[in-house]
Length: 406
Image 1: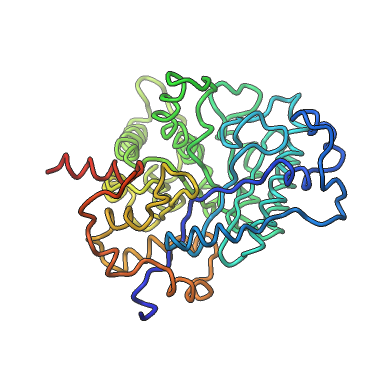
Image 2: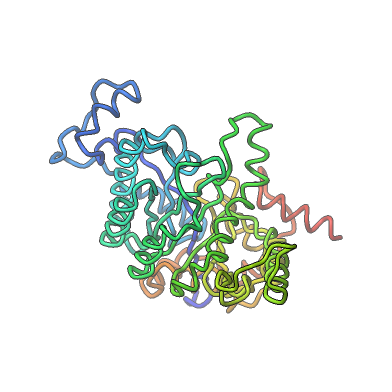
């Protein structure tokens, strides 16, 4: 089959984590005893930093992803690094008393992620994690991430409304971070989790997280827009991942309407607005020029919202491997559901060209693997007429939406 008969598939949203033993290997030795105590382990192997690395390059992951047609992936962290009370996305910013240990944990996570992706540098673009408690430390970590080839950029922690020991993301003190990311050509990633106050783990707690979490993540982007970050740093690039894009429709209209009224009247309600506090363009302009969107899960309703608001130029796809709530393990069928009536050129842009340009993937280097395992053009153009057994969230959601329409 000619190379052009298959798509190169880059997943812009995947996850990986190591075991506590492996993280311990990457942890500064000064913190290992405290880590052992924190997890109830008196002694662990790999205590000698000069010994053999326990790093597992995880070639099985490549096989599993190739079975889904994926040959390149942006890798976000997952699980609980050292000294984290829970998942890296859900933990929230550490309290001042927890910061020193938590920083050691996030440094271990980043060092593992750099090595994990360096085992397959053509395929994997790792995302580094940050803490915002001490901006000198933050900038040091940003520079380390850039120096160690983590093409996925940085994961920006979401600051929830209940955090009162850090300024909100619109504060100009964070300009040092935006300047560093712009100068070092690092993408700033926002992920859906971690943008909601801690409510617990029961259904009454998790349902608000699932339903309002997307709005809370988008809040960070809104704050970046309205605080003029993209005016001051016009080359800064931000992504939204695992955020249902249908929330954009109302958001873009309301932002532009409110901003248009403020410009025309100099007021919002009865409050006088200082013209110097206004940004240069409409909010939707920044959402088109500086923000990228990863459809993970890939839902047809999301694409309708994207088309009606910011357009497809910055759209990417993520199969959320190994999480089952995204496209994985039905990546091919989900892509068929949504893209079967798209032109191949537009599909190539979403599945490969846009994420390659944003995250620095070499499409020529991926071409041979894509020609071997990528989804075929004919396959993607074939509508999905029935759901596979044990269909996942994305498949069922798209199926129900189609059924409702008919």
